[in-house]
Length: 92
Figure 1 (cartoon, helix red, strand yellow):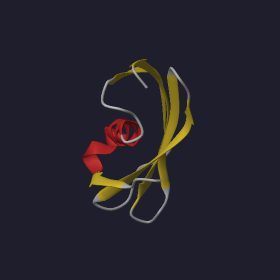
Figure 2: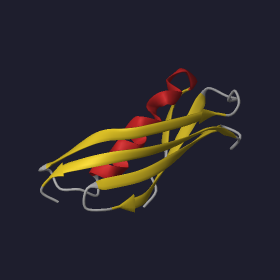
Figure 3: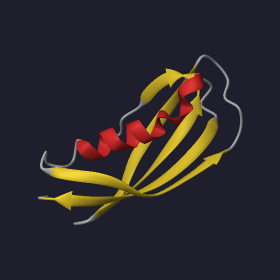
């Protein structure tokens, strides 16, 4: 399932929240999630009052989750792209 988040242009770094939410929806409450690696490419300035974060979980293993997130403007242009790796502890 894909989640699309909208936020004012000034909060474009909410990609991390969008990715985190999509991960937590797939895990049990007894787990902890820690950022292991984060890469963000800013491509160009967005147009409009809102940017849209579109997270996608690429891999969910026993101890790691890899996800990416596209940030698009109101015209659908790619503004930024993020890649996150998370370490998971606790009961899965």
